[in-house]
Image (tube, rainbow, N blue to C red):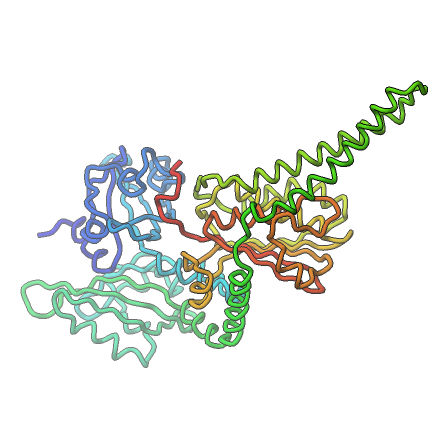
Length: 516
């Protein structure tokens, strides 16, 4: 006869959930079959070296939190199965105690939340009302007797049905199913060995509100041909059903958004790659000739004046020297930007939150915005977590675009910074030769004068600038950084201002990421 632990593991296996136990040394002592089939056999290994491929305990580890005194701890992680597929997992740990009440280990219930994650990312572009999908509802684990009455149910049912556990025990599952689905719910009793009942039904809670639940259930058998009981998992699907209805209602808005994304990506493709620096030698010569001519002219004046017998005018000499120093600094700035443009450094990708890096850049540009009395509006997407980026290069990108927005904005103007997730259409992915189906999106908009169409065609070309002072390399370097991340950048301008939009892949191949 199976042990209680093995039976519980088999129950969760049939419900599509992973279950495992670890000791105080974080070594895995038990794992159910689903976990072994998906990730390989972890028994005898530490959970962090097996699941996270690391050499030390993961940050915010729920098991460590249990060992520090918590009774229940959860964390969501991105992991890879034994085939290399990305899987989002929700880990929930609880303590294992000996007869003296001492914590000797922890058990983890692990749920695959990949589908929910993918759904959240796709729905992000369909207005902010879809963000409530980020809130997850814990599953209800239950057992029924041969008549379909509850003999066990965990406390998650209280939030779902609005009733205490004691009031639900010994009542029938069908008592909570809407009348139209009760005949379907009764078919649970016809389950055969090894079969899984997997259906979505309507549920009425204590307040009379209709909800939807997906129920996965398996029957237990003794010696007879009829089931002696049932074990299963109930998952709240109410939010998903309502979102589906809202998505249908907003179809036209979604089509319009996809059309806009298509146009932006096509504009990027039509604009083409930046020309190589060798093709811009004339612009380089022009940029360097003017400060060199000024330096040479004032140096010759100083030399001629010093060789004459006239009384030395120190104020005029200081003025000449100041002009020479200013122009030399200008030359140095041009050369520095030119070097930045020409060298293509290898990216050092790390998983970081881009919103945190942007906040840092906004902090160091705050004083410049105050000088022009600019107002900053931000809207950071809460669904964006850690993504693979080169932190230094990304901060340089954000600083270049913020500096450009500040310089282009009139006094008292507004700069808008938005982030979120973007899912281009298949047409846009093919047209832009993009590698990832989902992207981190950053928009920076200024309220300055619009850029004419002929200017937009050259906006990313080296040394093209509409400013009185500047090398014209800032946007070129920004485009290089985006392309090095296998992303895309576009610009849109009208009479209300100019918007730069950045797309960077939410996912990168594992061999590109530096593990730190």
